[in-house]
Amino acid sequence: MIERTFQIAPGIGAKKERDIWSSGVLTWDDFLGSDDVCNIKSDRKKRCDSYIEEARSLLKEGDSRGLCDLLKKGEEWRLFDRFRKEAAYLDIETDGLDRDSLVTVLTVHRPGRTVTLTHGEDLTAETLQDALDGCKILVTFNGKCFDVPVLRCSFPNVDLDIPHFDLRYGCAKVGLRGGLKPIERILGMTRSDDIMDVDGEEAVRLWKNWERRGDAESLRILTEYNRADTVNLENISDIIYRRLVTDYVGFKDM
Image (tube, rainbow, N blue to C red):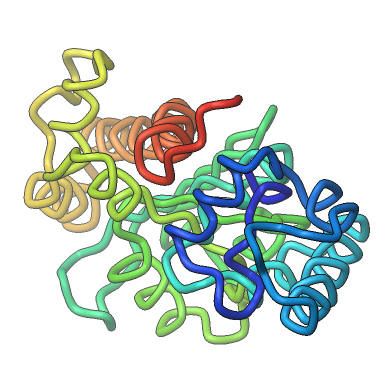
């Protein structure tokens, strides 16, 4: 999708972008190779060309952050397919709902590797930074409002300035609203019996059982719940990305 995105150029919005696609100009190369695109005047076309050439250079360099700076707010999802191999799927558990809440358990799922870190054992700024090393796009559910602000408060030296595909907003754009688990059910995804009924409130209780009484079973269930939240994001992101392409922006030729 990123190479088919024209909203990076000045004055091109969603409708104009669809008009460009309908005219047969489907990629950056098509745009740059055409003298006349949807009756865009010559001077304006040159300005658009310069933005697209910059974006093409950034993409060639694998610079997801530079590309993100060119995108409109809320359109970071357009980077996902190009950078999915360098994606990090992240979810945290905490002992409360405030930004200064304690991060109790955290999972970073990457293609081929899943790392779970626990407060008091192995969760540090260094281990978190290592888990995110090389990440080109961050994928969460409601992470823009909760996970990332909490992590910035707890680990201010960790680099979290990463292009962010928040599935809460991506799902809403394609008509799927509500929490993560209801959306999983709509998409036909299931969880094990151990964690079927665990929610945020129960996650806090499980942590307190571990912290106060050393209840290893509570920690096991909490960890399994957190890992399921995170690993499932990979499957959800693939489904939602495709719906964003076809249903939200209206690009059908994929």
